[in-house]
Image (cartoon, rainbow, N blue to C red; front, side, top):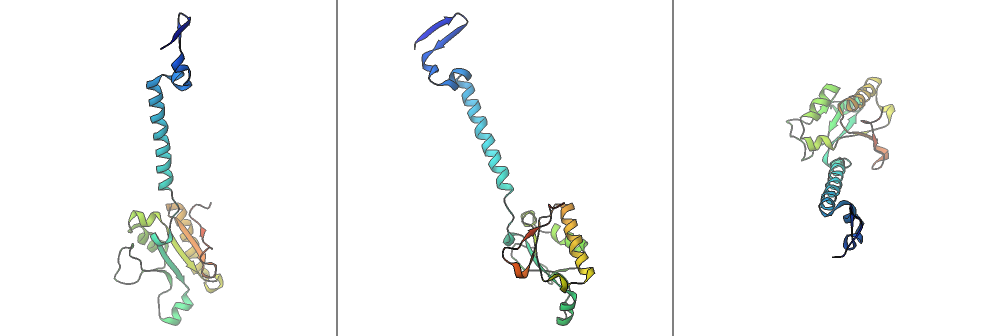
Length: 169
């Protein structure tokens, strides 16, 4: 190894001079910095992976059945939950008519289902009464407050008409 002393307090090593990071940091520090960079990249990826976009198939799907349509068919009006294997089973088809029922139903699902959000299909706004519209607006506000991913789309605009409401001020 060639060493040339320019100054008694500073020794120059020609082999290390070709690798500036080793020359400046020393070989042990380079390993430490490399490990730190790898860990930062790993945690950045892990954070991004956990913040992946919610998927409808893994969340809770429902449609909002207007009262006057439900009355014609002898059914219950409100948010009709679509059966899916990822949801906890119910004795009867869940139809949610209030924010309390909505929150209770969402919170009893597995965490992974909750993280994938609630997906509500609606029809033309004129099909709903003012009280039904208020229920939907209250659910939007509740979703913002409770950090529940909420997506709403008109049936005529599917599959690309989804609007997210949980993170809108």
